Amino acid sequence: MIIAIDGTTASGKGTIAKRLAAKYALPHMDTGCLYRATAVAALKQGVALDDAEALQQIAINLDLSKFRDSDLRTGEAGKAASQVAVIPEVRQALFELQRSFATQAGGALLDGRDIGTVIAPDADVKLWVDANVEQRGYRRWKELVGFEPDLTLEEVIKQLRNRDERDQSRKDAPAAIASNAVLIDTTDLTIDAAVEKAIVAVEAVLARGKTV
Image 1: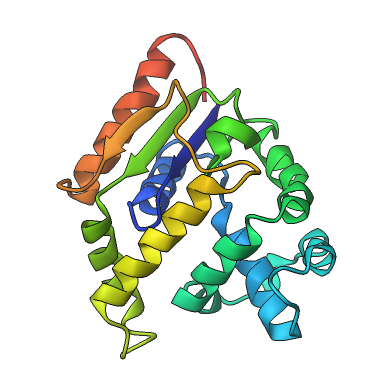
Image 2 (image 1 turned 45 degrees about the horizontal axis):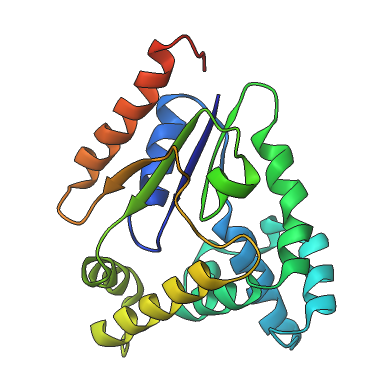
């Protein structure tokens, strides 16, 4: 079984993905980390975030084990990731890695922004996780303020609006809900309630005879 979970930043898709992967014993890839790592590596090497050729080489040779999670979760990393993610050469370099992971024997679960539409359009379960930008901004602010004490909630909400616009308007693989995806709006949901909705979607597919 392939499960594709897409959605906006700070909507809860990452937490839902981890819970589902654990429940169904599926290998999990947070594809956003690939773009964050590419961007962080570029910043450390002094590579411009619009240098397609150099960024492509970084993506081709990417080794996630060399990055600390705390380095990938900063606001700067997220902003830079959305900038490199619009570059076709970077997306192509990372496509095969994601596709190979998705189609491995035994199935997989991936979360990102174009899994159900580009990476695994043949996924058995597709979810789109979203929430209003104010709620997402508050969640992200709480997550980042420990790393960046001077960061304001207003700044985070502005960053998310810009991130949404970049992700949804890029020419190559824009973030978009697949036509057959199940929408989970987490604005007013606890994480447990959101996970339960996701489980219901998976169980509906299993009930039709698909196996994990």
